[in-house]
Amino acid sequence: MRANRFGWNDLLAEATSDIGVRPGRLVATIAGATLGVAALVATIGLAGTASAQIERQFDAVASTQVVASPATAKDKDGKSVATAALPEDAAARVARLAGVEASATLSPLDLRGGTVSAVSITDPSAAAAVPPTIYATSEGLLSTAGGHVVTGRFFDAGHDRRGDRVAVLGSETAKALGITRVDSQPSVFLDGRAYAVIGIISGTEAIGDLVNALVIPDGAARRDFGLRSPATVRAKIVVGAGPQLRQQIALALFPDQPDDVTVGAPPASSTVSSGVQNDLTTIFAAVGLVVLLVGGLGIANVTMLSVTERTSEIGLRRALGATRRQVAAQFVVESVVVGGLGGLIGAALGVFTVVGVAVVQNWTPVLDPFIAIGGALLGALVGLIAGGLPARRAARVEPVVALRGS
Image (tube, rainbow, N blue to C red; front, top):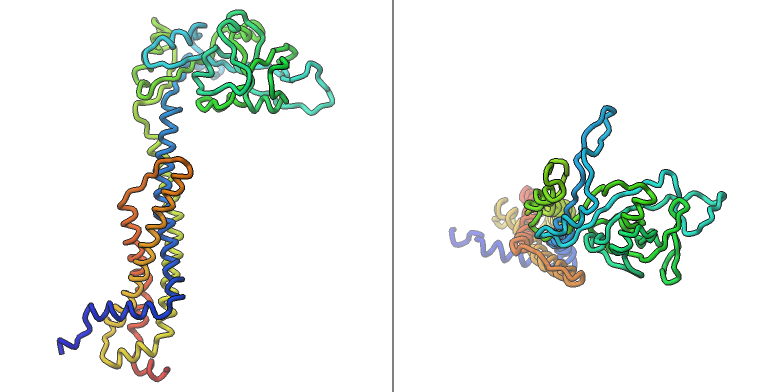
């Protein structure tokens, strides 16, 4: 009796032989698990790759920027007012510190209802346009913001010292004003005052608002707009120099009262990039799990249909002595094999997708090998879960009823 028992080898042979009977249905069933696992592996891999890219961008921009501004306090009306004024040579003081690559002052200007135009005559019938943001700055702004000159040049210390009425436009502001070149010596009119446009800039990643702004020298702002002192001083620093420069910049600007300035410097290691990576991984993994769930439902539906079509076969097996457990195990093994094949193919497709996207985007692919291995095992697990209900239904088929129905 013991030699005639239905062993594991017999179970695996029966399950795999029945799987290949309907190749079209087999391919369609495996495709569901394949797409689910591929989507899950690819999304987790792309999340890690994108997060690494974001981290590099963060190190290249955000972690190299320092902003210093006067400390503020509340007045009797509850408004925030500055308790000190930055010195006019604030950018030069900061630039002398070790670890600072470039520095510049930056102050927003208020036209108080004035207009910005590329023509000297204002048409009263024309629709009012929103003026761009106006900034006063020192010569080192372009190096500090990491931008480049599209055409023309940026103003220098001589323009600032003399208070020359020159202006540099952000690329978007230049488009809005219809100025695409500076060799014809175009001018913009700030509340009726003519400023010669000497350059157009773009690519200011550290201060993104500059592409939509108009920039003039501090000297011109002091003469025409009554600028008393810089609003902020910005510095581009080497990565990791933020903690010590936070104290040094305050002492350089206010040696006697360092508490009169607020310095926003990045920490040596930031949790921003890791937070972004966790968010991306969570979102992409959720999408992949949804696709994987659809694949599992596909396996369950096909297995349930197989049970219905093979009722007579199940009845014959039961009549020949197969137990309920053996019948259920056969269908479970079939589902596990289908899910495992889908998981193995899907994991490979997911890895190739991550590598392909990384190559096209010139990124460095980041993918934990355990994710790929886990994807293949996950496909088998989905097959195990999906085959549970159909297997239970198959095990409940009574031999007499099945053979009578056939």
